[in-house]
Image (cartoon, rainbow, N blue to C red; front, side):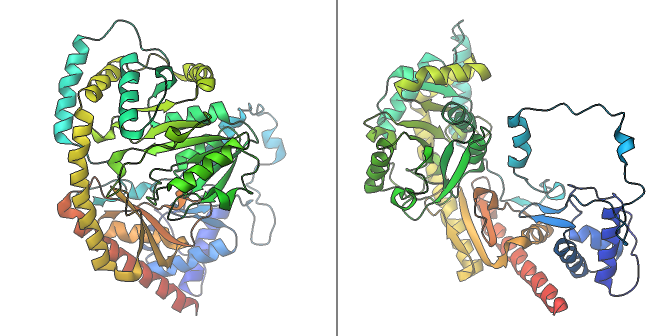
Length: 504
């Protein structure tokens, strides 16, 4: 990166002036993410603290904005000279006269970019040698179960029927799924009400397209998987956040807010990432509330591979007396291998044809081999046997990881999701949320990848909040991962203190 310090005076004002001039000249155009503070410091030959001060002044004067967990971005500022005149290099109206008009897109397409969450910055996205990745959402998988899956897959190839499965999915798989859900979740439904989908996200998208449209009011839990909000927001719906507590969502607390709601999305058996489970009284109150108004309840059921130390609970749909609950599984087949994706939706009979019609628009006859193989895998009991083995592995990792967090952080960290296997929600309340990028950079310096949990919240926390995914980390590296996290956190706190002293 070719940069030269401009002007005279204190270093941070010279760095500020250099970056400001590059923004005004278009070298850093609107919407572009500025390089990391460490990269700028190396290019200009100054300390990183000086660059942090310059970044703070740029943001204070409106030239940049910080996206929590992603970085610092240039805002849409017109190119001006310091005297305030328009830059002569800026395009005039006449320059655009011969350009053809822009072709409009659908409202769905124009909504999409603002809903896609920023992931790791580019320079942090690679997990090189020696880097421990606490952002890897892949669940642990059962090696013995994967071997059984391969054998069943070969058998399914030999017996694959010639007819495609159709939009509802292969009949044997629908039957096996319904049998599994009946014994493990208490679900009672007709086989025609089961629809096989490619993933939990396709289930969310399908449900949103059937139930919501522009201006429809949809309630979701807070915090919530960003994919849930995105699916409903893509339809143009007005999405409202409803905070959960230790017992999940309390409909009595949100009834007035949701008075016009057409849809309410909940995860009553195991809320992610908090791990809260909704007790019987709250479930009954939720159903009574739904029956008194024209509202659908969408139930996300997080499968057993995510649960730790919590008894399997019956699904909310098993209590539904008036067919108001649409049910779908999340995190189902990943226990065999993380790259595999599949889920199912159980719909009320009144909605069956609508769901099938909408699904057929996006896909049908999908992955016949995989569906028939899964039917055998479920029916032969391999799935449940693999879950039992996997739960033992995750229980050990959970205990090791929790012990390490308390040993290295003590009371300086607040952890949620103790009933959720494979991931934890961690609050670092001494570190302001705007310092997430700095924490990420410090973590990368010590060989650790981190993920912000800010995208899971409507009301973004004022402090740094992390989603720590440990399921895919080897047991022997769990303590090292937490040790590196604690070191990065202490360095970030030191950076904060240095900036505060210089400003003072």
